[in-house]
Image 1 (cartoon, rainbow, N blue to C red):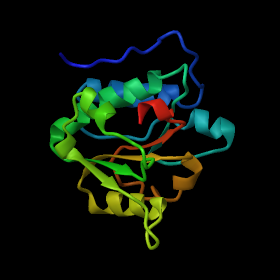
Image 2: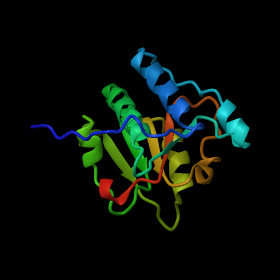
Image 3: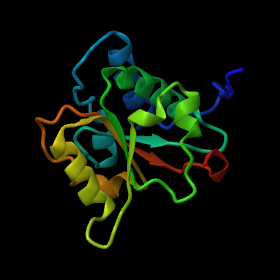
Image 4: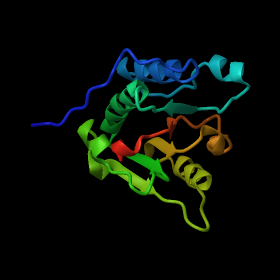
Length: 167
């Protein structure tokens, strides 16, 4: 029997990130093969602009943004390109992705080293153009400079606040 997880749809969404995640999910669900930057109205209201980066905020009582991301990644993974995870927490487990229907053989994990910090790893993943999506973990501000190439169409997400119970 396939494991599933319940998501509360009554949870409050942040004004800045939920629309961006939903907009990108809607484009993919409609069959769009290209990833266009979302409207940066919400980010500009906060004084932040991060190109193609989409922040996915996960809270203990609000998992809807993560659910949208996982459904989007399942669709993206059908291109048979890598889903690249940048600097996931050390206790992170791939079961969250496999339960969403993403093959573990399509997931590539890049861990930070003394010579490559997470931002450098994201830049390298984007420059190699072998990833269907790049997902980093941490604060979006840490990855703001990693996605400077406006011509890059690879979807980039930064997961912030992943609860330890999901690792």
